[in-house]
Image 1 (spheres, rainbow, N blue to C red):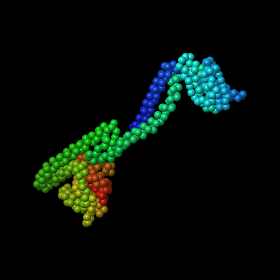
Image 2: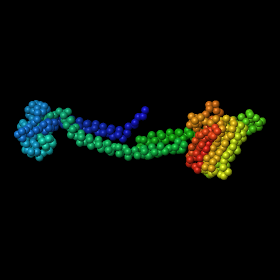
Image 3: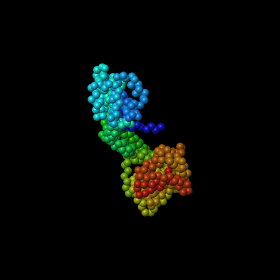
Image 4: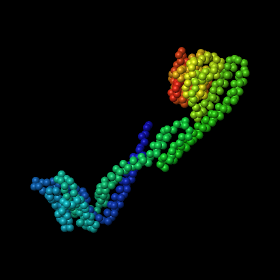
Length: 455
């Protein structure tokens, strides 16, 4: 199940906005408490708003109220309510007795803007509010009083309505814009480190991420990753040392064993023992080759495929003949030059021929061929490789038949060498039966046809 990770930028932005809201609520609560504890009265803004929104002009051209339940209840329950309402045309609607101190203001109402006066002593008769608003009748001016309130809840709501959108909304918008920009700017080093991690080749030892490029809070994560790479590299080095040591230790007893078998009388048993010793010797060499490939010690140089194939065929010919095969070399008379590592490509040919000897059916012709376009290979006349097994035979230690005596490293080693040369291996069926593997060295001037391998 894929879970989409949340954006760190958005999480921080929204949490910061939430913090701003909490801080604003706290400040408004403190302001409400300060005003309320001082017994300061005020006129609820909803009162003049209800009046302004329910005005109409009657048939006589005078301002009157529409029938409205809230307005009707207000007039009935507020005997001390007074107000004066004026529109842009100078039409007025009055109610109650305007305090003498506010009568000059009432005469100049159309020249005033919204405002209020708070009374601090009971009965708070001087609490007053001027309210202006645009209505269907145009601009309307209201001055009212006589209904003071000291309700903490209403006061809180009023302060919230007044300051909330004027402060919190701009802060929220600024946060949504600035915080992502600041985070992206601060996290630029993370993208750089991510590119470094993406470019790491597991076969290249010593690669590390630059922990100084990320913020201090992320440095422990990068340092832990570098420590893991260090442990991984040390594990590879330990494995390489083991492979090299084991292979070198095996060389001496194998050589002694081979020398002693050579002294035996010719016969089927001697041939069988020599084949087994050759396979054991080949395994030791394969271990050394794997260790050498892991260190990328190969050096490419111009080489003649015809000469290389001839030398390898001559070295392996006695084994092939003793095992009941014929070995042939099909190559041009002129040199075929390619760029490559002679030792590695010799190992490719040796593994292919030895595998054909082991799994070619014990009879027929094993052919090493070299073409003028720079390809070379080995094919046999054995049972071949089933199509459904061809994608697995390159796996290390995989054997086509469980009863096989091989270690399953030969074809894997061939694939690694070909990959090191920038090429590929294609599997096909040889003419007349048997197996054919075609390896193309794409990074070189040549392609390689490889056949007759099952390890």
